Image 1 (cartoon, helix red, strand yellow):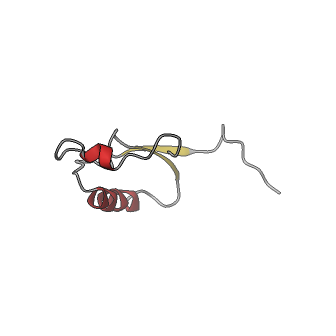
Image 2 (cartoon, one colour; image 1 turned 135 degrees about the vertical axis):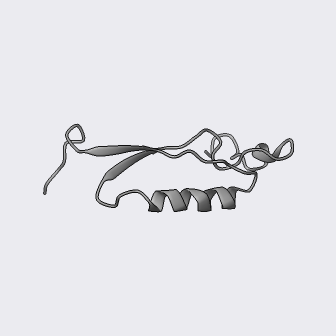
Image 3 (tube, helix red, strand yellow; image 1 turned 90 degrees about the vertical axis):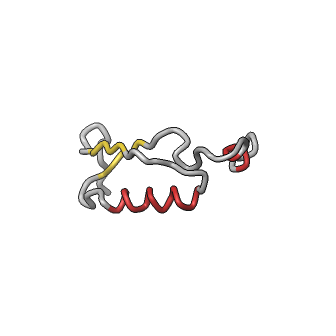
Amino acid sequence: MTTRNPAVTKWQLSAIQLTSQPDPEQNFQQLDHYLALLPKAAQHLVVLPECFAVFGGADGVQQAFAEPLGRG
C-alpha cells in the first residue's frame, strides 16, 4: 500500500468567481462548467465565493434554501 504525504502532494489552488443568481440550479450549472475547464491531471483546492449557490432575489430567498440547524 502506498500512502502520499499531503505536505508534498502538489495541489493547484483555483478560485472561481461567479455571478450568482437566485436560482441554485443555474448557479450549480455555471459552477460545473468552470470545474470542467480545470486541468484533469492536477489535484485542486477550489475556492468559491460566499453564497455562491444562491444570491439576490427577493427578501428571504437565501433563507428558503438554508439547512435546518444541526443538519448542515
